[in-house]
Image (cartoon, rainbow, N blue to C red; front, side):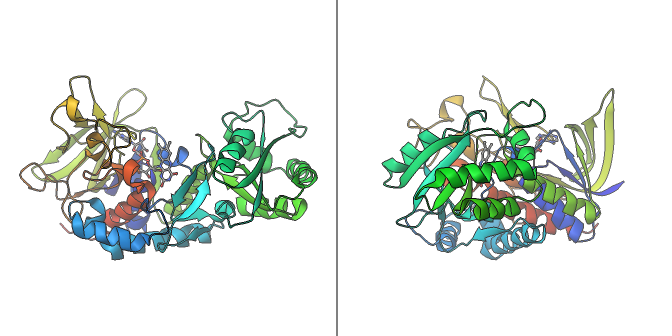
Length: 415
Ligand SMILES: Cc1cc2nc3c(=O)[nH]c(=O)nc-3n(C[C@H](O)[C@H](O)[C@H](O)COP(=O)(O)OP(=O)(O)OC[C@H]3O[C@@H](n4cnc5c(N)ncnc54)[C@H](O)[C@@H]3O)c2cc1C
């Protein structure tokens, strides 16, 4: 019998498992596969407030106006506590984040757009531009989906002085599939870094900052940035790539080490497919294993299986929407025709993305009558109803805040 079982290994599940482990539990994390950590750009988006608006004030006003929103279940104090714990975690691991809830930073994407984020790894910080900066965007032809000339052209359209170049791939020992993960391994090699740094110095001209794809090593990216800065003479920053995300892998690795050091265990490749409960108490979940189902009995369960993108919610052509792991009731549009607003960038987002599990203040799942379905289950992350993380740009912030809150609530549960 486990004291706690966490289902899902995205940021919500990882943050929940950390909260539980630090509260003295020994959580087992079961996940079908990697979470959106391996897709996300690696920034922590708390709310998409633009034009210099104060993020803390905007979220506090939203909470007051929408008490059904998952951020309202956690509260502003809880949100900030979760973000503080996250920042302390990454700082201790040597991968610090900068930023604040005062004002979003604007950092370039792989399309050359500027996107708001509350917190970014220090390796991306120099992408938040000041007036008068001259940018060089550099990449490798071998790296798919990262086009420096395109990024630079789009930045120039936003009145930013930018130029894009391709670097020559330094000599490497063996032929690789040139994906982001393999490039990160190459940047962990000193000779490779030296060659790239010298090419940047030669190509820099009057550029004050150089943007590179976010593949600057898996071991110690801040040190790689420092080294390239020292050789090239310009400030270096990482630009999030298309998946797979190296910054997300760094985060996953940091959480895994912290959870295991605190007494937890991770089991990736285990999809929860069946449950057993007794009244309003969940007792057992079954995950898929090689030739049979594996039984996991637990006292508490944290469900963080993501929304539609994470596999926690599925839909079909008839318009049916269901929760995949525990079979919990969902709040969702009744008819398929009501899933989407007429315009893509509708002012309230699209109704289907607000589908999810409704909870009480402890994040316990509720049914349509407002009754708690399971007393010993808490729900976190994109699986929660009444948030549209894409439209609101609150994805990672919501996952961290609700994961932390759910873990703390469960840790206090008595029976
Ligand atoms: C392409 C992409 C880019 C993104 N970029 C950003 C960004 O730049 N900034 C930002 O803030 N956020 C970004 N996000 C969002 C963000 O990283 C996460 O989506 C968010 O943190 C939600 O996390 P989650 O833990 O709720 O769910 P997920 O990360 O989706 O994790 C769900 C987990 O549950 C598991 N699971 C699902 N069903 C089962 C089951 N039945 N049994 C066992 N396990 C199961 C999955 O395998 C996975 O481990 C991005 C997301 C995507 C997809």
